[in-house]
Length: 523
Ligand SMILES: Nc1nc2c(c(=O)[nH]1)N[C@H]1C(S)=C(S)[C@@H](COP(=O)(O)O)O[C@H]1N2
Ligand SMILES: [Mo]
Image 1: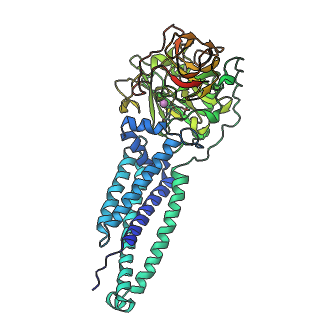
Image 2: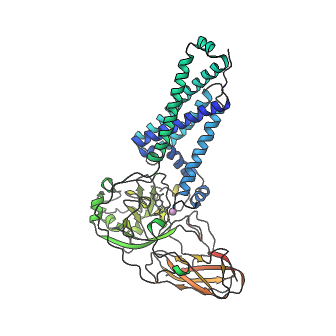
Image 3: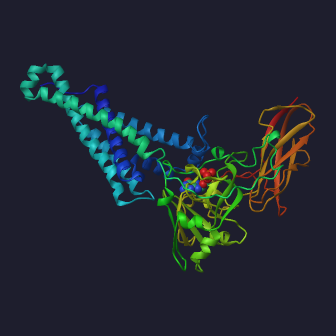
């Protein structure tokens, strides 16, 4: 009898096809039953939940030319998970030269990891177990079929068809089986890839808001930016607005299906439909959002005219009970933020349940159909996109998503300046260097910005028109510097007269600090 050991290529092929089939079936079943249970995305999301903070920060800092904001991190993560699965499948194949069992054991482990990722997802529902289980089952049988077919084919090749047929009595049958198996596997892998892209990932289609009359945003007063000197425009275009979130699949919620439940420590639990929400008085407020992960000099900051309903009024309608100190907001995909109740109840805070940015319905990526916006707080403790649930509770009782990962419980935005001109290394005309940038201290307002060259005396910068204390403020300064290399630094003071700190801190746990600086060349 021939020793049927599969060639490396064959056993790896068998394994990779089977793992691919498993993945595809999982994504397809998820797409049909419960999109949030897609095992591939669930594993990727679990990687984010379990990864050390520095790695997550590294991911967020990624940017590839041509990719829209907030996509590079997700693309890298998904491709990374795919590469790991592929490597594991290859190794499983190498171990399965003689018997299928080793590969099946590896598949079982990978399958259980997928199941665990789905089961520990914040949106877990019982129905969600079917996708990973279907994936595991499909991979398991596919491995068996393909492996035994390949072994039979190997025996046949080594012994000749006649002998093998006599020995097994089913050679031609086996070959037929095999061809069918390969075709099935190939088709399923193809379908699975489509499922992965369409069902599990990507963006679905959603109903439009219909005829909601979003009040037109008031015009920005002239002189609010110094674009000619290199600052951003005062209002950020929706397409250019920075994007940060954990959503590997952008939630696609039709306004008709959306509702917001306000519950917990309240006198009257409320559930608002989209129609209920937009029937309330709507206001438009310019607000600058900032991410706590923004490094000094970074670009995770943007400004929009947000239109929505006053969040304070909605909370008061529910009647917060004494004892509540946190509003835990939950997104459709299970992400949570914890905002101090006292901040949301400040009469002049201006927190919004926003439905529009710059006069248009929120883009899907920015929380369509409804998100929270709270001036003065970093996004991770306040700016819940795709918000569907507000629970009045206590910080002692419930921890929001990023708190469990080492970030601070309370996170007011730190006063900070950024230099946009000159750029690092940029040659500037000696004698008359025009520097420009932005500064922010949301909800306190920016009162002063100063710059200094080569650690010389601080010189005042000219400030642009203040639009709101909840937004950034642009600055510019003309500097007389001799030819040669120089270091430019900047600092901002808020309206309470307090200067930003010089002490350098990295984003974890409550935001970066330190003077921004740029080395440039005057000539
Ligand atoms: N549902 C959901 N909302 C979220 C997040 C998230 O991961 N999921 N990230 C928050 C963070 S960290 C920031 S900085 C802001 C960014 O909002 P933007 O993407 O519209 O700029 O959204 C916040 N809201
Ligand atoms: Mo953020």
